[in-house]
Amino acid sequence: MKAIVQDRYGPPGTLMLADVDAPVPAADEVLVRVEAAALNAYDWHVMRGDPLMARLALGRSRPRARIRGRDFAGRVAAVGAHVRQLRPGDAVFGDLGDANGAFAEYVCVRETLVAAKPANLTPQQAAALPLAGITALMGLRDVGQVEPGHRVLINGASGGVGTLAVQLAKALGATVTGVCSSRNVDLVCSLGADHVVDYTRDDFTRDTRRHDVVLDLVGNRSLTALRRPLTPTGTLVLSGGGVYRGGSLIGPVWLIARGRLVAPFVRHRIVTLTAAPSRQHLDTLRAHAEAGRLTPVIDRTYPLHEVPQAIAYLEGEHARAKVVITV
Ligand SMILES: NC(=O)C1=CN([C@@H]2O[C@H](COP(=O)(O)OP(=O)(O)OC[C@H]3O[C@@H](n4cnc5c(N)ncnc54)[C@H](OP(=O)(O)O)[C@@H]3O)[C@@H](O)[C@H]2O)C=CC1
Image (tube, rainbow, N blue to C red; front, top):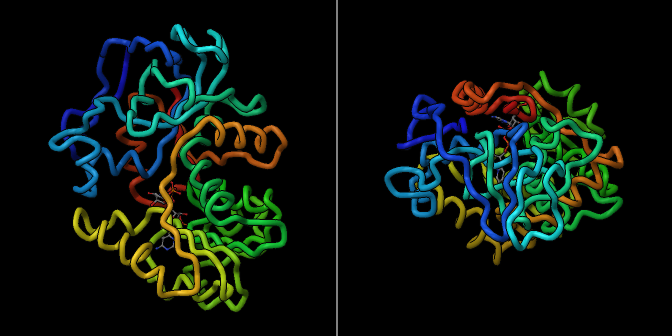
């Protein structure tokens, strides 16, 4: 099968289209014929092995998983002996986690990390949901405990996670403030945001509205600034962004300083989020999608052999929502 492989960390030029053996499903796995895959900021961090600390988990001198990509949608081609809920031909979507392998014609995935595709979405739209959607869902519902009537502020509202987070926050009954650049104000409004702050003109941390939850997807502001728009007992959810910037040493120190050590001395709840894929979360995303409450926004679509160009585009950090690969 064709796949995008990588034998050393580095820039997009280290990614190659290659012929490799198709994987064979273990007893608890399904083999999926991939129809679409989606890019995440995660993919370019793995590609570059950045931050260096992440290489402890991903592989020291090169990525242990040779094929890149996490999010996919496609059709089940074969099932392992212990798989009970899925059958060949089923349309599915999922997140491979650190196992990677989605930028390929076939993937093997544990049954617990895959779910039925939302019936009303194309494979490209469905592939755009898993990691970004689970991050938004965990940040708002599981960690932020957003309830009807809450005020939620999303910094990075026009990105892959943010465009889904705006819609999910509305689905949870919140009043939503989205923060993005001028060119994305209309987009964020169209997703249902009640207020939009253009960060090129205004400083959202000076916003006089007080929010129950601030979801930070950018990581370019201090903890002090991010806490300012919170109610006295509000929750600050930190997800990515600056945690990665500055490479190996600054990353963990930043994480500790922003998310952990400071927390006991402040009234606000401050939580650093790590998204963990699960079928339950995928099922929830499907329910929202099929009810018309969640529609992924796709910025650009590339063919499989152009994954390097797609990653280079995403790495610019100003993609509008999701970048998708058609396989
Ligand atoms: N903790 C976890 O488990 C996960 C963490 N993440 C992290 O979450 C972050 C967001 O991911 P994702 O949405 O996919 O990323 P995207 O690249 O799709 O989005 C980036 C967003 O950042 C905004 N942005 C860029 N520069 C600035 C700036 N100077 N000031 C304010 N906003 C800015 C962009 O807005 P605009 O274009 O309008 O400028 C855009 O909305 C990433 O850092 C990613 O690593 C993602 C998934 C899981």
